[in-house]
Length: 109
Image 1 (spheres, rainbow, N blue to C red):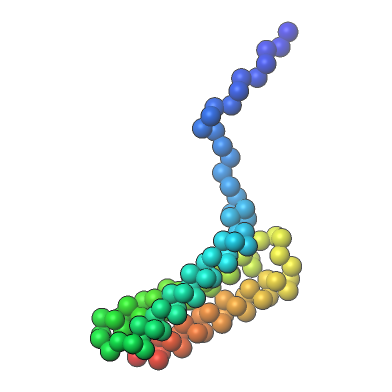
Image 2 (tube, helix red, strand yellow; image 1 turned 45 degrees about the horizontal axis):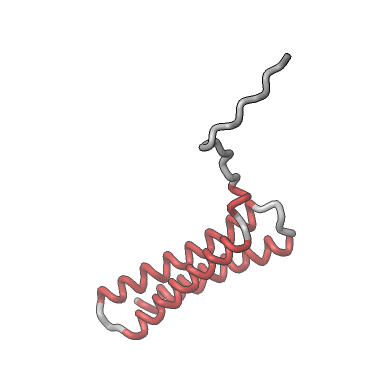
């Protein structure tokens, strides 16, 4: 007679794979936060002449562009569920985000 298997521990779980974290919602949220940071940085740069505010605008512009580009690039390279055209679109979008953030950074001066 074989004994039944004991139930698993309540805290036992399997970790989520990286591909499981690259959902459309997460990629959209990263891009939205990045665009919001770029936009707020542009508003601060336009509205204020203070040197400290311009420093904050620079930080927001660069970090927003990098965050959005990182999310898009990770999704394009890491997801097996996207087609080649979707991957190309995500990579182009990442390049556009970086270009806009660098142009904003150059215009802040």
